[in-house]
Every structure is written in structure tokens, then in C-alpha cells.
Amino acid sequence: MDLRNIAIIAHVDHGKTTLVDELLKQSGAFRENQSVAERAMDSNDIERERGITILAKCTSVEWKGARINIVDTPGHADFGGEVERILSMVDGVVLLVDAAEGPMPQTKFVTSKALALGLRPIVVLNKVDKPDAEPDRALDEVFDLFANLGADNEQLDFPHLYASGRAGWADTDLDGPRKDLSALFDLVQAHVPAPTQVARRAEPFRMLATTLSADPFLGRILTGRVESGTLRAGETIKALSRTGDRLEQFRVSKILAFRGLSQAPIDVAEAGDIVTLAGMSKATVADTLCALEVDASLPAQPIDPPTISVTFGINDSPLAGRDGNKVQSRVIRERLMKEAEINVAIKVSDTPSGEAFEVAGRGELQMGVLIENMRREGFELSISRPRVLFREEDGQRMEPIEEAIIDVDDEFTGAVIDKLTGQRKGELVEMKPAGVGKTRIVAHVPSRGLIGYHGEFLTDTRGTGVLNRIFHAWAPYKGPIQGRRAGVLISIENGTSVAYALWNLEERGRLFIGAQEAIYEGMIIGEHSRENDLEVNPLKGKKLTNVRASGTDEAVRLTTPVRMSLEEAIAYIDDDELVEVTPKIVRMRKRFLDPHERKRQARTTG
Image (tube, one colour):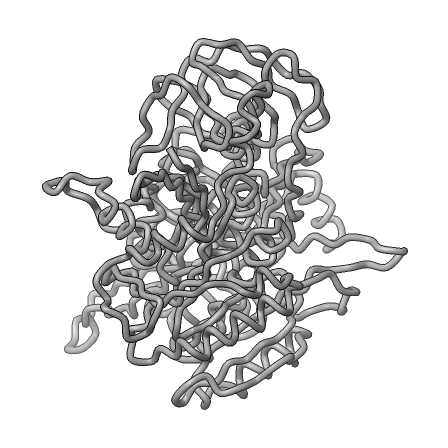
């Protein structure tokens, strides 16, 4: 069968997964009476809840005698490690661009990776049926983006389509018939070349492992594209590391191929096809699975380094162990090492104490998703504030700079520019109109300055602003950046919060807890209205007397407390604070000192 391997890449929320849904439906991958969930490729619970793609996933459709393997990729820069691996096993990409927003930061990131590999993109201008769509402007911006990224003449001569993924149509002309996606299917067949590996089927078997997962019945399974040769189920092959060292020899227990949303067992894997193998125990991502006579490993694509680091530790608060059942440092370490094995964009290292672990990754969202997955598995953790990773170049300290693209109402541009360029050491690159009453701001800001900024940004723009960011470059250290301005309210007692005490504390600032909640000494229960921290007693009840008069016993009415999400709490805390994460609740607290440090401070203060 004629074969094509493509990846669909785009910025977050530009409609990749919705378009794949329609491709599956119109290719006949589903029965007529089959019940299929919306955004079927987003199978992970967190993906469905947040409406974003986190893990790259493969599917397969048949069209006019050809099999098209399609890879749905994440759209957020924090999960760019998935995209970098996936592009190495496809022969073409479909670049999806919102006709209203145009190319955005993630569009630039994934397109640069695709162009560097020599892939010739197909551009699909999606959502052209929206009232604010400007497909001609978006198309010009895509061409400018390609030129800025160093595309060659063939890549600049890209075909384009106008489409609406939700409505399920794509046409070569904006005023086309708008019936179905046949124009996209035909263009993929005509423009994307067949895998060059097909000509190497007579050579020994070789395959580069691209994604790793686990199956409850098959155990460890690896997915990738067969680079040469053929493989039958039951044959014995070996695994080589990136450096060519032999890891293991194993018998292939099963070969699976993508058929619609599921995987089906096949007898033979042939060069050029994307398949999944089972039977190994040690092989992992970027390793080469090959015939016994092969000595050299396949080259793996380099992965961009992490930019932030977070400390994962055991939960040592007085309320530890009440919600979760995985609280030991040994269990936490095993889980983090397992994650680092699957996700090549994450690095895990031990701290000197052995009770905590440094986890380096791409951004706050990536860390937040990992923590959310762990808490749902029953883990209890204490999480530090994210720290930016620096590096030395020629004796100079360098820090990561991010490109922030912001769309705000005109009336809020002053506040946003002041925060970014004045307080957070950013540089304004561009400012231009972006539609009726909107302004687009492009700024280069240190990663340190953007940690914890999103909450402030939403407040400054009354919730109407949109901020997208992506790694831009390394630059010399820009000096200290002021952190959170407000102090916090800290409990000095252990027990259960009292409504009367919280009512009296409301004038001190915003509260993060309500009445009848478990609290402990050192727990952060609110934000102080001033810059200093304030120790308070949320257990203090009302003094009772035997005097009764009208108005003295009115019911206490508390203001609704501010409930922070996991990502908001991690971005909010300061360097001397931690986030306590359990399966049921997220709390913030001051960092507990070890006994030696506590004694040293007591001697210092007299």
C-alpha cells in the first residue's frame, strides 16, 4: 500500500485535534453508528479537562488506496520535547494557522524544527469562517515567518488551503464549495513524499525508538518509524544506546500498527511504516532497535535543554499522610525517574539531603501537569518555587530570555508595558494594532521575570489579555528582579479555623482559607495588604459574656476565600515558601527549618 507519514503542528488552541477528528470521520475510520467523543485524540484526563494536547499521539487513515499515518502534536511550548522527537519520523508536516491570530510563538518554534529537517510544509489557514478572520494577512505572516527562519526556495513555495476544522471542510479557494476535507487528503498524497526508507527493505532491520509507554498486558512498548529492513513477530533483535553500547537482546512478542484510534497486531513491520514493538525490558526513547548483525546506532535528534528547575520533596507538614498513600522519598524518586525516562525534556537529579529531588523542565505548565498526575496517583509532595537555570559562557553568567506575544485591549497597554519593561527587565520589540480596540505587544523578557506574572497580567488586563511565550535566546544576566510585593498571613496555631477569627482578619488582606478548615503553624492562610509577613491566629474565638443585646450576636459573613490552582500557587510562593500538594488539597506554607538551622537562628536573634 502507498504510504505517507505526516505530523500536524500548530500553536495551542488553533484546532489541530479537532481537524484530526474530522480526518478520521471522513476517511471512514469509524462505523456509522460508532459513538466517538469530541477531540478523540485527547485521551488523557488532564488533556480533556484543560482542552490542550500534552502527549503526541499517532493515528492512521486510508484514502484512495494510500495509508496516511498522522501524528497529533502538542501545541504548548512547555511540551516541545514531544514535537522535537516526533518530527524525526515523518516526511511532511501540515502547519495549521488560525486565520485570525496568525502565526504565534509555538508556530515559530515547531516550524523552525520542521524546516531544519528539510520538511516541506503544507499550510492550512483554519477557522476562516470566524467573523474576525483575516486569511490573507495570516498567509503573508506565514511567508514572512518562513523567510525569517531560513527556509529554502522549495519550502517557501508552499501550498496552502483554507479550512474550518470544526465544520469539516478544506478548499484551495476561499470561496470554494466547503463540502469536505478531500482537498487536504489529495494535497497530502501529492505533496508529501513517500518514505525513502521503503527502498531499504532488503537491508537489516533498524528502528529509532521515539515514544515510550506501558501496556497492562504487553508491558513496556516503544513506538517509532522503521528505518530499514522488515521484522516479523517472534524474531530476536537487540537494543543499542545512543552511543552504540549494547543494552539488551530480546524477542519481539508483538508488533502493533495504528488503525484509526486503536492499535492492531500485524505480522510484519516494513521500512517506512510507524509501528509499536513489545518485548523489551531496558530499551527506551532515542535507543536503536535493530537486527543482531547491526553494530551502529541511528542518530537521534538533539533535544533543547531545560530552562527552569523545581524541587520535589516529601510532605513534612503536620497534616502529612492524611490524603495520600505514597509519601516516602524512595517512591517519589522512582516515579520521577520513570517520568524522566519517558519525557526526554525533563532531567531529574538528587539533592545532598536525599529527601528532595531537582526536576528541570521547560516551563511552569509542564511541571504543573507532572505534579497533577502524581497527586492523582496518590502522592503527597512539597514543591518549591521554580528557579531559572543559568549557564556560563566565556566567564559570563547567561540567563534564558523568552519572547512574549501579548494581545490586550488598548486601554491596558500602558500597564502591561510598564510591568514588562520597567519591573521585569524586558525589552519592547514591537507594538502594533491587532484588530478593533486591540494591540499586539512583542517583548523579550527574562524567564525569571515571567515566573508568577500571569496572575498579575490577568488582573492588570481585567481578564481580557492573552499572553503567549516561548524561549528566545540566552543573554547576559540582567540583574536582580523584584519578586512578589505583598507579604503573607501566617498561622501561629494548629487546629481548625474559626469563622469569627477569619472575619477579624479580613481587614488584613485576602484570605486563602474558609471556616472549619484544618490549619497548622507556619501555613499561609492569606495575602497581607502590606509588604511584610504577618503572623496571625485564625483559631481565636469570640469571648463570651452573660450580656445579651440586639446586634451583638449577628451571624458572621465571610468573604469568599481565594482558591488558587496548582500552577497559581507554585508561581505565587516566594523562595522561603513551599506548596504542599496532596490528592485532595493544595496548601502553601513557610519552609520548615531543620533543627540545626532553627537553633542557629535562635542563637543569632538572642
